[in-house]
Amino acid sequence: MKTLYLQNLRRELDATDESFAASCCKKLGIEKDAPVRIRIVRQSLDARKKNDIFYCVHAELTVTDAAAKRILKDPKWKAELLKPAEDAPFPFGAKQADGRIVVVGLGPAGLFAALKLAENGYRPLVIERGRPIEERIKDVERYWSGGIREPDPDSNVAFGEGGAGTFSDGKLTTRIRDPHIDGVLTEMIACGAPEEIAYLAKPHIGTDRLRTVVGNLRRRIEAAGGEVRFSAKLCDFRTVDGLVTAVCVEQGGQRTWEPCAALVLAIGHGARDTARMLFDRGVSMAPKAFAIGVRAEHPQSIINESQYGPMANHPRLGAAEYRLTARSGERGVYTFCMCPGGQVVASASGREQIVVNGMSNFARDGKNANAAVVVQITPDDFGTHPMDGLRYLDKLERDAFLLGGGDGTAPASTVGAFLRGEASGPSRSVAPTYRPGVRYTRLADCLPDFVAKGISDGLTAFGRQLKGYDMEDAVLTAVESRTSSPLRILRDESMQSVSHRGLYPVGEGAGYAGGIVSAAVDGMKAAEAVMRIFAPLP
Image (cartoon, rainbow, N blue to C red; front, side, top):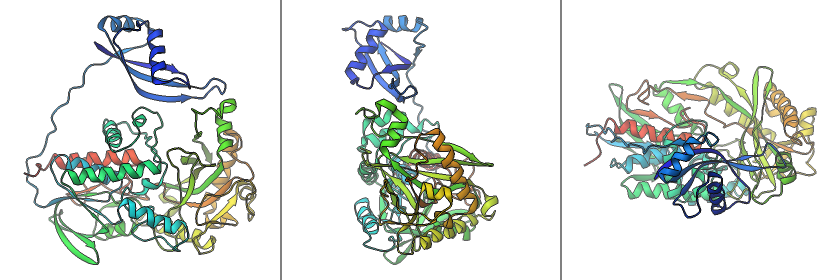
């Protein structure tokens, strides 16, 4: 038997796995009773022709040697013969660790770093300032429902088991190309994610299913010998000759010092107080570009019709997605983290902040579609000191808080009023999903002038790209300010801080990732960097 890789196989929307396999065999001239196995490697939707939408599939086909030889000779299939992968043994280090391997943060980067270490015999200590997922969900719901005026400072949309991605669409798309991606998806499937994430071109889990996956990943870490401490915060660290030797952990009002041989820092970009502590301790950092803007909400039905045309109501298509880009002068304007059938969520993590983000469940069956509409900004806009970006965002989020009325409601506007530069009245056709509520106002008053102009230019351009996007009654809610970290914790090729050996800054908070999968991959690679130095524990 031989395994071939075939690209661009057509799969009809209504095809089952069985009917698709039968269709492939028929086209390839494989007899019905012949031994054959088809594994879908990648499946994407081709909606370029609105009256002829189908799936484009890349697949691995295992067939007899004779069938493989015939298919390889036929130029129309462009088939490739796959050779079995050879796994080289991992080069574990021989040095005995003088202290524990400590992982800070239990978002994607921290989870996968800790899992890799635990399952290879290192028994890491994981500290997470927030609470376990079940408690965290209750804390967030109290804030969203208006039960408390401001979020719990240590258990909110940014902090807690799973990190910020837990309250998102659970997108697993990534622009990076890395062999670790398959490992990330495999572990997620083993912990409860749908098997289709292994092959869909645009996989997602949804916040509802992601919460189960996150909890199961943590239990895997614990079962393999790792220790997870919740409501535990990194508040300091010690060095000897530039090497990290101990960390100070604050938990229950008490501070304790733990010997530390390596510190994997996966703090997330919401942990501004920790970033400031690290800077004060001399950790090398630099400002980096990011993007800010608003969340745009449209009826999902309008997006479906614009993307799918007469096939918009086909049950296999589900809620349509989009990704749009434009220019405003020399700046890029683009949509980010689009959530089909989702909701706009309150994502503040501190006092006197309004921060918005998007979230959707696996079914994506909400009435509205939402996405960030953001404008690129650079250190030229906010300053070249490593902390200038944090100060810039602190002010931006407080301005949104004050414009929203200072009571937890978010400032909002219709698209029409925003484009005219007017104070907005309520939308007549789109009900905002943000909780605890919105206050219609002149939204540009909480945005830098160039950002307001960039959003206006973007909305106008997007209306030409996607019919209905610039509709009068679509709703904008501010402020979308946490697209990525405004700073980068500098590291070298060994993934260690350039200023502190033994410190491994990883993930979005360190400025090295841009989503769930890329952060998870970064965490796994940091764990491997540690494993190349130290031997597993006896």
